[in-house]
Image 1 (cartoon, rainbow, N blue to C red):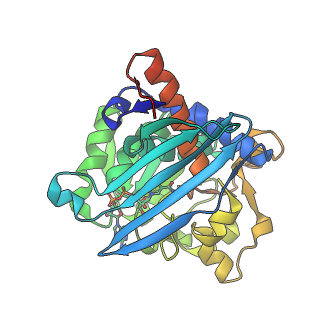
Image 2: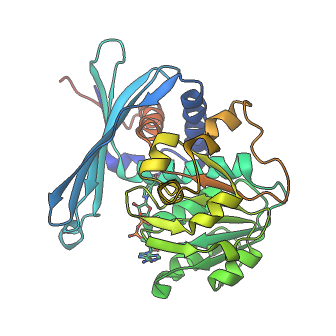
Length: 320
Ligand code: NAD
């Protein structure tokens, strides 16, 4: 089997590699060539969360699992709080093929998912990118998003204003002007909004969102989290990575619970990728992508990481 350590991931996989892997696996999911297994998630006490996200990608020839979670005491020990590892198995024999550090991969695959949604759903003439959230994931999200349209400016809002320098610094790195704004101003200016917070109450309200906006809602990956006022979802065409996750742990959970949205009104983005759904149908339409984060995303980028690491001599081979 191959080991690709966490330290080898940095610089191995770029945003384009991740985009290609995620677009392909979303397409495979919508053709029923790939499916995710039920997610296991356990609270271990003391704020610790541990779980498994797994699936089979018949089209890509991958079977795997991401094991990991959130360990709030890690920061005091000099480690990051989110820890994960992806294990890949031969889908025909079940033999373990690779163990891959999953921390940076998680950020890359999550950013790739919203980038795929922007590529397929945002207006072609989108010029202003709005960022809600300035935590760890936000920089990855911005870097992946700006590759999809000719953005001329980034506007940002964060619940904790002291974190806004992360957005300003990332925009500067990308050569784009940045302006910290109110949510009202963000909605008025942005053509594309990426929301990536751990909030448990809506930040972006229906009144903030103007026609034609694309919203990639990426922070809500657990029951109880929320970023958007549910009324936005009734006005918008709603897309997701996986409908079952969107209605249970994704942003759609709230609109569905309030009877404002049905499963049938939510489209897997893979259908758009495959050409089976038109996606955006007018410049005035609001589109929302509810990115909940599925195991097949982790498996897809981990498989690509193994290929690249082997090519570059960065993978270690061990006998199990
Ligand atoms: P982080 O802890 O580094 O940052 C948290 C962000 O949420 C900050 O911007 C913070 O200001 C904001 N926030 C906290 N409380 C808020 C509130 N009450 N109202 C509005 N904003 C608030 O976290 P991160 O690593 O950047 O992750 C952000 C979110 O993305 C988390 O919820 C995480 O679970 C989720 N996530 C989703 C996926 C996916 O695939 N969809 C993948 C990875 C992470």
